Length: 186
Image (cartoon, rainbow, N blue to C red):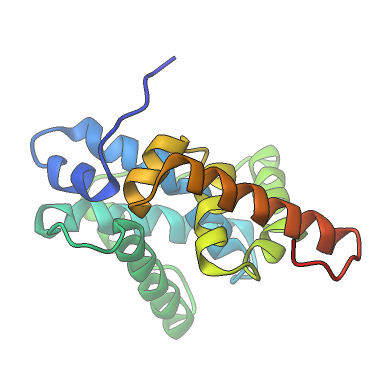
């Protein structure tokens, strides 16, 4: 199994110019979250996948201009995603200009792939996650949706691993209570 890359998302983006695998790590950390973001906002899994691909293609193209900043690089990525969503809504379709310019082939979805996207995005848990306070929501998203380690999340959020664990625990407990119909905000 591949070891966890200790670099922050911002460090990965900066390193992409000399280390192409750095962007691969950044991609793996965020692809599920970005795909779920789009799936909750567009009519079909195919469009969500197209927008996800275009978002990461644009991020790859722009990575050479990325500058480290105090806020998480994830915010930069989701800014690109919001722009792609806006462009798609304005045009009535996903734009594939950047993907084509980079020579990336279109992704062909199978029925199983569509089912996986629907399951990921249709989850009421994802909707509940969005109602959590920002610190809990960010920790739960990074740990559960993106599958990142506590150490990495703590470095990105500038807090200790125990704080991240507590945020994840409280966030999941709140979500569980809400799913069971309890008004508790644990």
